[in-house]
Image 1 (cartoon, rainbow, N blue to C red):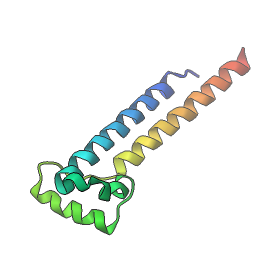
Image 2 (tube, rainbow, N blue to C red):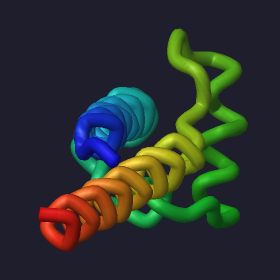
Image 3 (cartoon, one colour):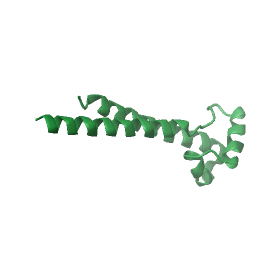
Image 4 (cartoon, rainbow, N blue to C red):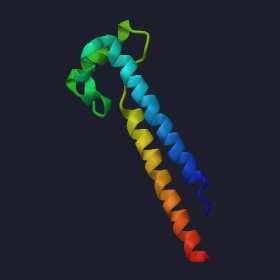
Length: 95
């Protein structure tokens, strides 16, 4: 088993995490401006306060932030780490 697919998954997971961070920042910065710290929980969880921000998305140029991209990115990176670990252990046990 090769480690390459695991490396790709880790890379895609990292890119997804960066994209989720940029999306969260761009979306909530337009709504809250300097008070962006108030939306820190919206980065990883959907709460009633975050829903208010999603309702304001109607008036913005960006789609409403959804933490599903963050969690999907973490899952892909985690699967990639497991893949790489399994590939490394099988390679070392064969040789």
